[in-house]
Every structure is written in structure tokens, then in C-alpha cells.
Image (tube, rainbow, N blue to C red; front, side, top):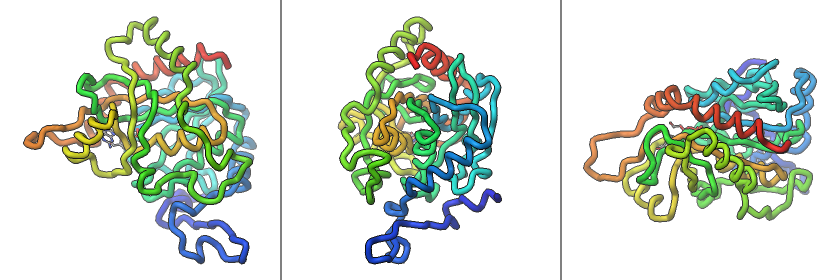
Amino acid sequence: MSSSKSRPDNVERRGITFDDGSSSKSRKIGGAFSSVTYEDVQKIAKHILAIVKCRPKIGVICGSGLGQLAELVEDSETIPYNEIPDFPVSTVPGHAGKLVFGTLKGKSVVLMQGRTHSYEGYSPQQTTLPVRTMKLMGVETLFVTNAAGGINRNFKVGDMMIIKDHMNLAGFSGMNPLVGPNDERFGPRFPPMSRAYDLDIRKLAHKVVKEMNYTDFVHEGVYSMMVGPNFETVTECKFLHTIGVDATGMSTVPEVLVAKHCGMRVFGMSLITNVVIMEFDSEATANHEEVLETGRQRSKYMQKLIATIIEKLDS
Ligand SMILES: O=P(O)(O)O[C@H]1O[C@H](CO)[C@@H](O)[C@H]1O
Ligand SMILES: Nc1nc2[nH]cnc2c(=O)[nH]1
């Protein structure tokens, strides 16, 4: 299958068939409703499980420049996203676009080396399709990682943040992967989100941080998602700071919503790749090269931390 098959500009949106026989496509309902059905996801999961021997219980989504965790995976089996029918394909530098199956510190895992984002043109349902695919492959615990801009003034470039909660700013404009008809086989119509980030894994993470002497540069805080692709204005950063956000990015939240909806345990971690600009007259500007360079310099610490938490996880 060619990689262009699943790119956002020419992806065939099958949509939903309504009671009167019309489809969401013919009703010209936009991206938010271009749902992927349970059967679609089942088909993709079966396709993948027919290729790999591994039966993962833990999934890890590697954010911008953070895919090197795959180097620690033993007995690895790799599938590029563009070889999986209907799987969204990463189009951004720093996202290799591969599923890596294998054993990480004794645990069966599947790693996503790169994700897709709404700003690439994908609907929230498409960007989260891999999470539902993991669920139907047997994954019970999801680790989400990302590169993010530090809003908290105590954060320095290269620091890390255990995510304790998120602010779904994209959701305020209706961009939420759970919008549309709800299939109870995935989860309930109204899922709670007050404990989105698993408390036990967060406690374990803090213990591991202490044992590894990482306390000077690992914090805990609140992540927010902006749709992007532009970085924030000064006023937007000041707003985020005021409402209690510690780090901001363009991903993760939809994945967490879908993972919680389908009953997964979730742990999230941000690498602070840049500190956001909050002075109107600053000449500094945010850029993706800095994000990737920080990833190159600091991702090994994040990899070690994530790998050790996974090693010590109860299941
Ligand atoms: O969230 P991840 O995918 O780690 O990447 C972050 O870094 C990119 C911007 O440099 C954006 O894609 C933003 O979301
Ligand atoms: N929105 C946003 N995403 C990022 N990803 C990495 N850094 C940033 C940032 O400063 N802002």
C-alpha cells in the first residue's frame, strides 16, 4: 500500500451512515464527525496482530524527537505506518512513523515512533485511531510523551514534567475525538476525566525520579493542547500561565481522552524543549529545530526514566 493512501489530503472519509441512509460524508459533516468505526479499528488491529508475534500490554507514544526509546526494545518487530491500511501517517520531522513491538525491560510493549496531529489535517478521530487500535490489540496501559514549551517560569529547557492533568483548549472549539455517535464497545457516552492521569503510576514515577537522582529537573504539572501549527503569541502564553498551565504543546490530549474513554491507564510526560516567550519586546522566537535539538540532547534521560517506570510497573 502506498503511503499517500492514508494521508489527510486524500484520505477517503467513510463517515457514519445515519438512519435515513445518508452518510456523514454526503451530509458534508466535517472532520469532527468523520468517525472511524469499531469494525474499522478491529480490522486494523487484526491486520497488525497477523504480522507481529508480540502481544503488547503497554503502549508508548513517542513525541517529537523522542522516538529513540525504540533502541531499548529487544526482539523488535517494526511496521511503518504507511504499510498499515487506513493508518494515519506522520508528516512532521522528528516523527519516524513506525510501530515498534517487542520487549522493554521485560514487558511486552508497542511503541509509536511518532504520532499525527490535528494541524497536519487529520480529524481528532484519525489522530487517535492508533490508541483505539492499541486497545483492540490488548494494550491496557498507555504512556504518552511529548515535546512542550515551558509556561511555568521555574522550568528550564531540558527539564521534564510528569503530567498530572490537562487543559483541553482545543476542545473549547469542539475539537474532541469523542464528538459524534458513541460506540459503547469503546466506552461510555460521558466518560469522567477528573483522574485522567493514573495516580499510582505517577507515585511510582516520583519514586523512580528520586532513585535516579532526577529530582532537580523533573517536575509535575498541567499540560495544555493548542491546535497549532503556530507557536503561541505572548498574550496566549500569559493566558496559559494565568489559568494554571505549566507546559503547552499541540498533541497528547486527544490521545488521553480516547485512552481513558476505552478504559486504559494513562501516564504522561513532557520534555520541556523550549521556554515560551512572555515578554512583548523579546527578540527570541520558538522554532521546531530547537524542539528537535533539545530532544537530541535530553531524550536519553526521558528514555531511561520511562523504561525504568515500565520495568517497575505491576503489570
Ligand atoms: O507533541 P509532540 O508531537 O511531541 O510535538 C510538539 O512539538 C511540535 C512543535 O515543535 C508539535 O508537534 C508539538 O505538538
Ligand atoms: N504549542 C506549543 N507546542 C510546542 N511543542 C514544543 N514546544 C512548544 C511550544 O512552545 N508550544
